[in-house]
Image (cartoon, rainbow, N blue to C red):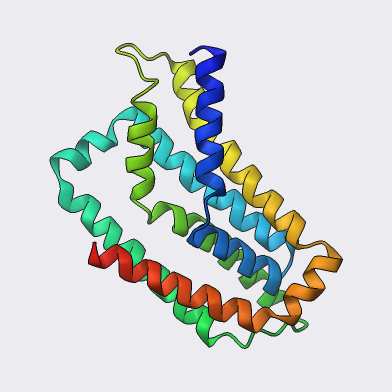
Length: 203
């Protein structure tokens, strides 16, 4: 892969990460309701899910979905159910920030990790995205280092972008204003996630 091709890959992956969607909503919600670290955990685990799809796309699981499209459909429905569950949780949230015991805080860290990972793993469109993207770079005899580059590039960009979002949103001047509107943010997030879930099952 030439430097020009790699830069093109970087550009596409960056634009894909920056496009608004449920992943951004989940990062914002965890950052506002808990902390910068929680938002960054969502971003890191979301990136791990992205990396899994990138690896599976390069190594050929996409061909399995081509043979058994029902697998992709079932995964899409599972993703829609998870988005709907997140949306309902957001709508029911009180939108308030309170002191937490260590046990509750630990639970929120685990929830941030789980939400970040599942929001990407239950999004089969990532597989389609990587199939289309990597088809431009994969050759008949793709070397191991090229596979590594193609997997690490979207993983690092995705995690870096969402960690940057959490970092910016957690600045005291920004966070105070956001937390004052935490309930509104939860309501908007919940509605958006439910609409996305509805769109997934009706397409």
